Length: 487
Image 1 (spheres, rainbow, N blue to C red):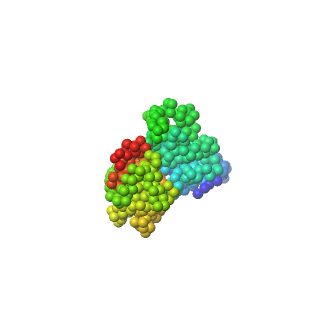
Image 2 (image 1 turned 90 degrees about the horizontal axis):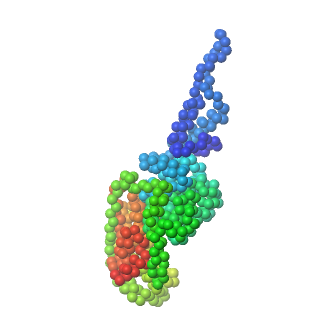
Image 3 (image 1 turned 180 degrees about the horizontal axis):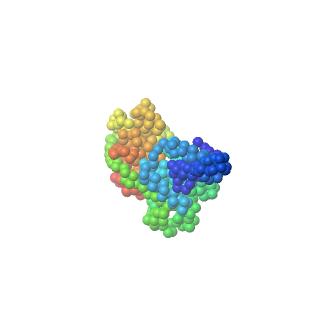
């Protein structure tokens, strides 16, 4: 319901508060009093409005009353108490600083909270930038909330297609994905350019894991925002002069600078702009149990991995597996221990179905979410499960008894797998971000227990990656080199 002319949405007011405000105005406007007209026996008593107002003013208040009543009645959800509190605090911070970082753990309602802040601050036109797979759920949240602003929801990769620069707020979902360093990612550069073209609107950053691997990840998340606390540093390297303990490491006979040693001062400097909120504070009592299942792979898998570690190359009849650098050796072993391989030609194939069969044998009767890393792992799962039992579509998963398979990086953020009985990892990613984000996809406030299963090859590389990720580190070449002797 849209009105041509209504009373402006007041700063910090919800639709209900605006309705009550208009109701007060309406009652005042319609106050009447008795007025006598004429003289003597001709005197008559009439009721007249106490206050003199034009018809246009009366219509403005009546239309506003109807508008906010409609918005209030069509809001299909009730915000939680802590969300209302964060909306109030966030609105104040946003008004003061121009940007806000909502560091709220997964499943605590970051999206709804940010939409509530946009409504509270009186925005008219909001751009919400997220991952492609999350667009549907964000649109659903917007529809249920029924706020007083228009919204455009788009994925980061399509941001360059937006030619409208009249947004008064930009919300950047999963903001940690812009945290690459020392050079900014294309995503971070796009957001910076868009903010500048849009003449510095309000900005809200959202993430459950703002700096999952290094405090240095904060710089490029905020560097495009006017008035950010590091704006006096013209680039990341000058930022490092004050906030990062830069080290030098020897990799492939080259001395490489390591910029991951960001200091606590980075978070201290960001503190005024951040609102933190945890699952525990929100009342989540979920216990997440992690289980490791070791799978005996085929004799061929162990033969190939042994040969590759020894010779760094395997020559087949038509294709070659080449591991002539530590990076490639790590990647090829990672693939082989999960039963797949990508050849030098670019071709790839499933080599060993042991992991897929183990998952099917243990979980075939359950509705589960399966995370895989390499594309051929999905093919292995489809060969074993069949399309009648497994989908990659979230809506199909929600509406049927099928299990779902998602790639770790694309499925770790912005979606809910609350209907899954368990999460199963066909493989493990190198990133700590993937670990923390993806394993919480099942969590809801009412769910008391989650089970996460890791499927690792006996004698494979996955156990070492898992240990490194638990220490909140990426599994880098340095980690890999130390473990080579034990693989």
